[in-house]
Image 1 (tube, each protein chain N blue to C red):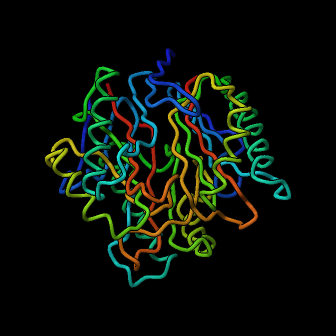
Image 2: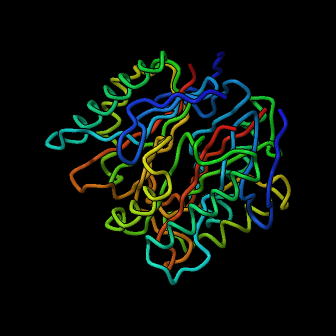
Image 3: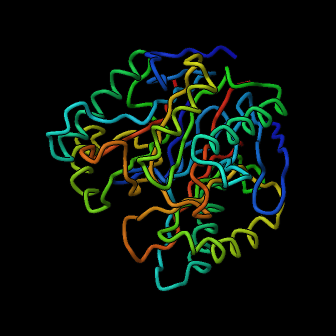
Length: 115
Length: 115
Length: 115
């Protein structure tokens, strides 16, 4: 099986393709001055970019895992989530609370997509 | 690759099929008056139903992620886990602590299955 | 689709193969007297062993999820992570904080690999 790794540096690849599937790393925002809605917009924009590197897009996301450092952020995260997918081609999803690498990061999302 | 989404509504699809694999969302119980054993019974029953929608069943689960809001609930969750699979066709599994969408939810399970 | 389960016992299989993919359970160290770096060395050694059972190896890991019970352990976990992969063939990765089955366990890692 061919494996294609994109933007490998340091400890991880940002996205990896294998056998028709695409796995992103847990993607976090660059600018942590935004609130959770703004941070989620950054993350979903970055996921769009990574999926495009693999020749696929958000319409083919199968599964998503979303971590927020306080579960009460979920509703404001969902605002950007729904803006992004427009309620179309929805993946399976789990959203759970977890402390993340930096306390200023308010959301991290990893997805599995088909291509 | 064909993608089939089942019970898509709002923010997620309950289960998605692609290329011979099936990914459920993180499934939570409807009735949170049950203890964790009872809630796990509800969740595994719902997973059975979702896998059946995709033409597969619990004997083909490859991987499971289980979240509990207090890791000490693990043993009582495992009672229902073992009732369900009878120690047969066991998936890879991770069970970790995480706060979930509602404090009354005592277990959430997502699985990947083959079909 | 053929499914091959390895080291199935009790509540889980340590690693499961299906359709060219390999999913490990969340792997934890046997000896919890080590610090997080030493525990991560144990875990990665065990993952090497499990991947070999499936006829694959660390160069084909696509995705990894790493849980630590205190996110501040991340840097010392990463020492062993980088020793292990040497910055080569890096997977997508998410590292989040979560309480694990036993407070003495300082790291748990699950991977998805191709074969």
